[in-house]
Amino acid sequence: MKPRVTVVDHPMVMEQLTLARDKRTNQVAFRKAIYRLGRFMAYEFLRTMETQETPVESPLGEVTGRKIKGNDKIVIILVLRAAIPFVEGMYKNFPMARTGVISAWRGEPPRFPIEVNYAKIPVIRKDDVVVIADPMLATGHTLLEVAKRVAKQGKPKRLAFLSVIATMQGINYVAKVFPRAEFYTCAVDPGLDEHGYIVPGLGDAGDRAFGAPH
Image (cartoon, rainbow, N blue to C red; front, side):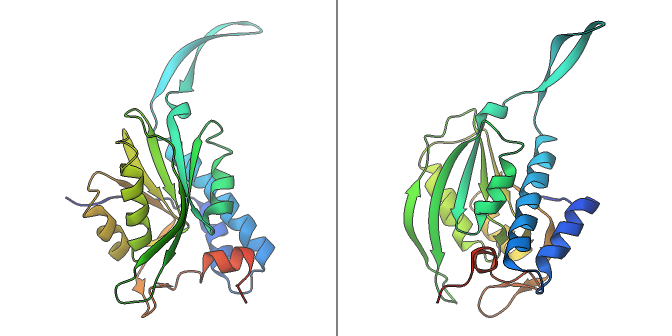
């Protein structure tokens, strides 16, 4: 089964992605770019949500309007720490979303073991739409571990991974275990280096947004 991948290539998305990729972009500007990309990605994701008709009366008469159906059923899973500005942007379009937080750390190649230091995930209901947010979907090891932990809390109606940049290697790695999952990203880059970083990518998103640890 071929993974369900949507690449969001709106001109505004491409402009912010270009800013985020540029090594000359400072910490504040980088964080703002990731924030804007989160907002745009959530906007595009809402295109896939069902809508329902609702009557409304304007100052001059009655008209049939539409509302998003299930906007209160979205659960965002935030992967610390790089996803913080990404998810902050998403909240602009997912204002009623419940949120889970996971601190996951990917170890060294070639096995890339995942260490989870903190996980607080809400109960997942069958009519929920779960969005796992992480700017970089590289090898897929981290997001697969996150998805497995989410699955222990319940089976949602939909499971989607939203990223800024992904690789097909990472997407395929996750999709083997979650074949019905959906993947939304701004770009699918060619591959990974020997350390598991996306090339050309944009570097370490967490370090660029919040500063490298000393």
